[in-house]
Amino acid sequence: MIFGFNTDVKHGDTIYHVQSEARESEKLLQTQVFVRGRCVGKKAISYSNSAMEAGFGDAQKEQQLRDQHRLVLEAIREGKLENVLDHAETDALAGIKQLDVQWENAASVHANRNLTMRLRVTEGGAAVPSARLTFRFARPDAAPFYTQAVTDSAGSTEISIEVEESALPDSSVMVQANHQGRTVTRKFALRKSE
Image 1 (cartoon, rainbow, N blue to C red):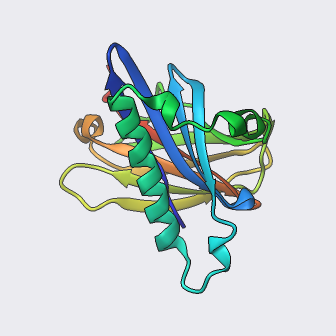
Image 2 (cartoon, one colour):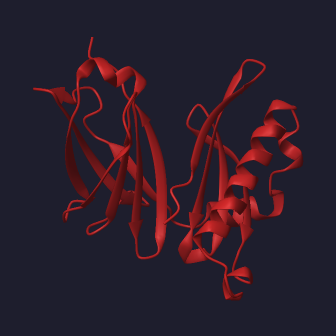
């Protein structure tokens, strides 16, 4: 399983969010670039031919995805993002239904030493039941913690992790949702309640 990569990078006055993930059902390694939540471009390469080669697996896909992610980050830093985006494929890729993960209780998640996250998986706005979510909780001075959950008929699920509230500003949660060969990865920053 490949978790994908999420990075914020600034060029001039603009902050770009770069998200790379393996789209297993299409056999694509896709990098999307967002500005203020809006996708401004994509870069994707197919690994369908490589997938038939002996010895080609998750490690090779992850390295190709890492290299592609780094290429886009460097292009943004150099002000040359347009040079690396897929102009011909962007419209076709935009038409593919995509999974999405929403964090439904982001404003109120920590109580009694527990971080509780309620998430909902959708595709084209419709709930996705039986999606498998893998969570990677990274916190300071501790090894990452992994857990899994499956969405209910409304596309929702909830997890609870024991953590001190003071550790939240330096922690993050990476969530990968999988359903019928499609994946989406999201990284959520955490903060102490006001």
